[in-house]
Length: 255
Image (cartoon, rainbow, N blue to C red):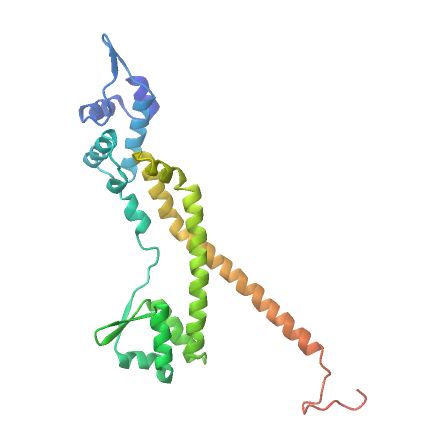
């Protein structure tokens, strides 16, 4: 028992407490000698991992009991909730028709409304509109205020949505291949999910949320830098390739 407690990084008293709470199975006995094995050590490490994630001992006992009885503990661990929890932090905005007109003035046309509904930016709820995102609404309003027609904003939004879906597909493919592959295979075979593995996956998914956003932000920023430089270089080439004039479109004498 002393060796097992040392290997698990806990005290003998804690180990006895776990045994009393039936958090670990009893050891194999030969006379007065109790034999512990790697299974006991793995169980103790699972308990430690779950405690670090904020689970109570009562909750851990329930999880381990479910695992021992061959039930899927994914739901108990909240793994499914983690996977389907919203990645976005967007706040919907309710707008009266008058408030929508305040944002976009004369650009509130039947065509633009139809496009907004088709893209999913707007939904109708009774006598009001619901915009899907405060940030997108503010961005669209600012673009229109600076001279970009709302129709152009919406078409750009449709294109951005297509590219965003492609990026999401890429991230999901990476997660499915490198994080969930073994889990999905075992689930398909009807095998229960190990609590430690479920905890690891949950932590990984939670970490990937800000990482994925950071990658997209960094790549978009660098892409904008490249594109702006390319536009400036093209403008300089076009300007330098023209004959200088006197400001009236006429070439000065001697040229």
